[in-house]
Length: 226
Image (cartoon, rainbow, N blue to C red):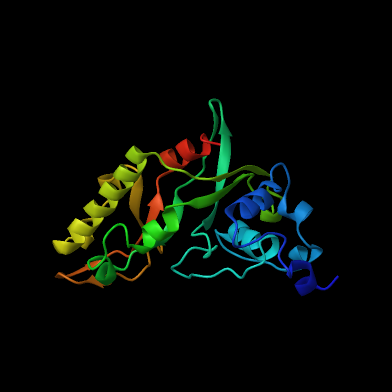
């Protein structure tokens, strides 16, 4: 079967949250290799986010991208995938959930409600897989699928975290931002030790590039909402 024929028309209605969610739930208990077109075995994505790339391309049928808007643009739903690991107390998130790069110059002109980070965070479709060391990501078993609905207190805390980061940038202190500043939404470092530092709008001091991410403990709490 031709690859494009397999994915067009899509097996879900991109204008319907219910259709997207029902289609996503079809992954529970399966691997991407189980559920996707055999062409998935011929494409190799490298890097940390390769499970997410396979998920987007071969299950949902759209190309991985860095678009600032939500993946399912008609319904304002962002697709996010994450790894979980088993502990003696049950499953927990393996790591933080990356949202997007922080542009130090742009954020100062945004409000939380109009920010790119909230556009991606306000209603995410989370697809979690069970991580196994040295396992091909196409063979990770999907365990949890959920469209997140935050409580009012969770939204308030995410907003407070975002505003704290913005305030530091406004004060010319982007270079002093720390992941420990916030509770749910973190301004995490990105790019490793050799990453070039970048300019900030209200100081000549260069700052480590950062991206917004949800902290692992908060991601675990979202996992348990399932």
